[in-house]
Image: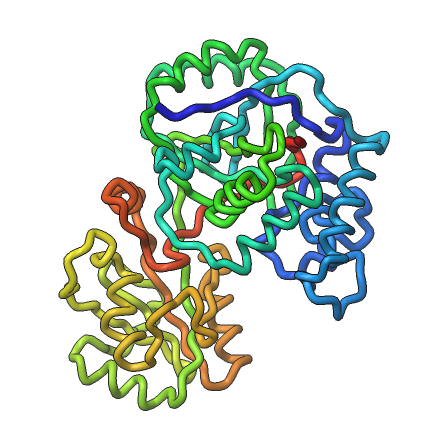
Length: 396
């Protein structure tokens, strides 16, 4: 069974929640975070991206960055626009993006269950990013941002969620990107804990590095109450996955096109910038779009059948020598929310690069890979909408 736990959250006051809440740390770089936080002293980016308050040239892994994050969190906790809950509670978090709506339970989950595989991952993590988040957790004595977890739909849990959303929300605001964020506090969370006992496993949707960092922080210092970290747990039927696209630096663009053409799978696209179906990839190179039909994998794993894996097997590995997409400096990942415009702009401004526009990984594929104990290639899924950080913080 998967354990979820109530907690006493540090949170902003409702009237300033929209000004405090920020995008997660990993969807913006330091320069983008500076722009977003400019003129916004309450923005949570000052805590999860504290380098924005230091000299622009500072290394993001400098010890001064972690100290500044701890200082900024202390100021937030002591400020007149935040409060510390006394009693533990569970919460509901609803996201609305256009016609899409998803509602999840916001509580704490166990680092032990993550390590035991009750919380299942589908991607490997990059050690520098894990070390970075671990240092932030230990410096701040807090888990400042929740991860997205998923569970197979459960009728009892769904019934309790529906009832709770009929009450008055704690927070309700629409962010600058048009996504509505609403949070309720359960008046009685014990029935939720009982219903959740029937959930056998949780699946990581977004936050692999934060999950691993939570485990590392606990392992290093074993601080009281640091063995649980915050997550919003959504039923899988609620989730919306977008593709995670790739921009790759290549030695010779035309030579690459010729090599792909030699496979007999390449054709000039007639105005199509995104794949029409699973098994197709759209390639942008030299100002034109092409369609690649990926051959069936010759490998035996569940994850090997994914489009992102087959792209590696037939193109990135043999033609470009990109064996480990996690560490190769010649590959850049572009989230699906940036659209094909993000790919075109990146390639047009960076000579010697090409873009691969992917078809999204399905939820069934994610669950199958996770259940098989396998791992996808890095950046195989991009979930939208994203949670906002800074609304409910777990301090220890």
